[in-house]
Image (tube, rainbow, N blue to C red; front, side, top):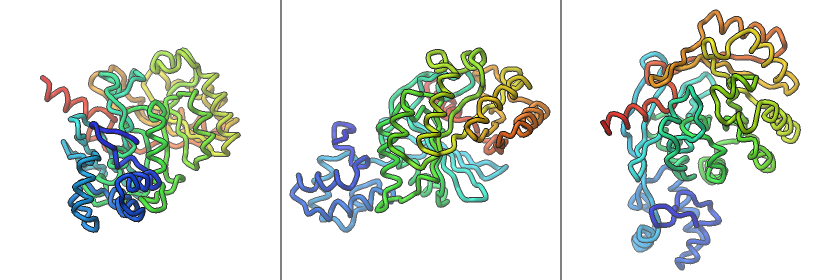
Length: 350
C-alpha cells in the first residue's frame, strides 16, 4: 500500500487496491467504488462521504491519510483570465497550478514535484533543488481542486509545472491511471501532455505502456554546446542521444512528439540554431512550439524579440516544420512556473 504521513495514502489507490483494503477491513467490495467516487470528485474529508457508515469513516480516518490542498495564494490575470494557484500541501510544502483558457477548452498545468533537481539555467522551479516527489493523489488533487477553485471544467492536462515528471515516474504513471479511469475523472489520454527535459532512460518504459498521451520534450537548443550551457541534463545524454530516443519512441508508438523551445535572446535564437533545429526535427514529423521566455528575477536571461522570433519561425516553416508560437498567457501573474512559489517561500523565510 502507498503510504503518506505514516498512514495509507488512500487518494493514490486504484479501485482494485481499494477493494483489497475493504476486504482487510471486513467491508463489502462495493464500498471501494463509493470511496473511489468520492476521491475522484475532490473529496477532502471523511465527513463528506455521506453514504458510508459512520463506523467505517472512523475506521478509515484511523488507518488512512486524507487531506485537501489549501490555497496559499491565487493570482488572476487581468489580460487573459489565466488563474495561477499556489497550493499548500498537508506538510506545509507548496506547488503551483495554472488554469488557462483556450478555444478548445480549459487546460490545467500541474506540478509533479516540490522543486526540481534538473538545474535548467533559465527556470525558477529548480532554484533550491528538489524537496520531494508529489504522490499520485496530490497530482489528482491539483486537477480536481483547480476545478473547484476556478469553477472551470478542465478538459486538458499538461504536466509541465514544477518538477520533472519522468523523475517521479511511478507516481506520475499512477496519476495518469487515476485521472483516466472510467469510474473516476475519466479524462482521455489524448487530452494529456507530459513534458520532459529529456530523461531518455525512461522513454522505453513510457513507450511500453502504449499511452495515447502527447510527449513534449523541452529541447530549447538543437546542439550540445548551447544545450549544455542551459540544461545540465544534456551533459550526460547529449542531443544526438535525445533525438535517437525520440525517434525510437515515435516509431514504436506512432505518437507525434512536440518539442518545446524557449526563445532566449542571444542564446538559442540565431538563424543557425533554427536551421539545425529544422534538420533534426523534420525526420520525426514533429511539432515545434516556440515559447517567448518568461523573465525570472534570479536569472540573467531575457526573451527573444519579435523580430528574432519571426525570423526563427520563417526558417522552420520554410523547411517544412510544423511550428507554432505559444500565446503568452498569465504574463502579469508570475507566468513562469516556480516564480510564485519562489517569491512566496522567499518572503516567508526572510
